[in-house]
Length: 423
Ligand code: ATP
Ligand code: MG
Image 1 (cartoon, protein in one colour):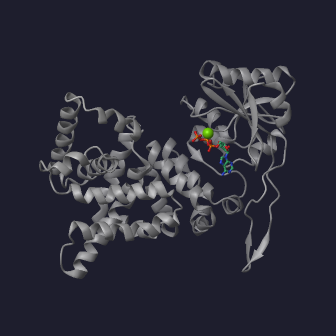
Image 2 (tube, rainbow, N blue to C red):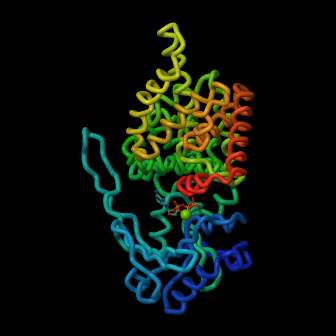
Image 3 (cartoon, helix red, strand yellow):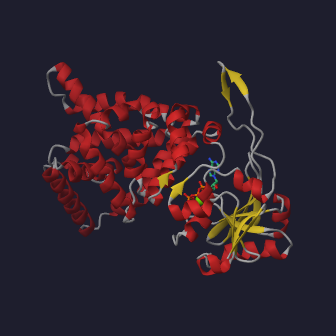
């Protein structure tokens, strides 16, 4: 049954598929204790969306009208966190449940800068009502609440319809919402590719208009979004949408230049293989993920350089060339220096691996180094998608297995130590 008034559309328990059995015990405990203490207690955000779709949520976030200090008082095992907006973490043995207090859209600060109005959010710390809390969220499908008091789902923004129609729709005026936080453009693309949804037309058109403003977002946040696409196995659709909407062009012009043409058709296949690989549960390092993204560009630049010089570069030269090439991009993306170093090493080592293995002692030792594993994963992805160097990849793979087996049989004490360090 559905009822609808100013308090939103309420879908009672018989009208939706969210079952308490899919909600972890600790989360239920938190919801119930808040409720029994006289507060509103809702599940919110991605968890309600995923439960309604029959998917397993990544995390379960709770919102309430209790203030952080009230929540803190109710749960001994809790602490208040966050400077920008105060949240409470309730700590269980194997899980942390995050509890936020309803908040509203912060005041928009409009300042004229070169006659362009800026409306970036600067302060986020204002408590609000449930409806205000729903409306300050990004997409309608992310703004649904599950009310523990009567097991109903509350919809203030039309999220239920968009969910059943498979639509990502931004809440409010798309232009305003994208300008106040340009990362939402990336999130729209992420949710569309991850859930197999389409981006609703006005939302999509606003991305086309505002795409260049992605450069105003903080680079670490943007890079983290890009890494998440790659880490969680929906990169192919998402990068495709980033190309189609033109969002990738201002952000990563060099990569855009290299992947839009025919010559990089293997790139899309490579993302497909990568998505399948991570979805199967295999862990791929951030360095490999970023290297996959950079590979077509790196290959193209090396080829261009060789053409210019009319000679093939020696391995040593390639290595210096790669370092000079990727450094500015990594800096612009504000990648951690450790990741940057690993990307350089993975790409450099990849070029070394293009020569098949021999039984040289140095190669024997190289198999135990982190860059070798990264480069081998990279070579695997490249070989499987381009059809090039497949033999070389198989030889290195067999070589690495042989070396490891021999080492294990000999009971080399160093193996264990090295393994631990790698973790
Ligand atoms: P995931 O399953 O990947 O965790 P999620 O929907 O839970 O997806 P989070 O990034 O964990 O996404 O954010 C939690 C919720 O916070 C979102 O569902 C959304 O309601 C809100 N939110 C997150 N980022 C923004 C943003 N940039 N602007 C407005 N609301 C946001
Ligand atoms: Mg989440």
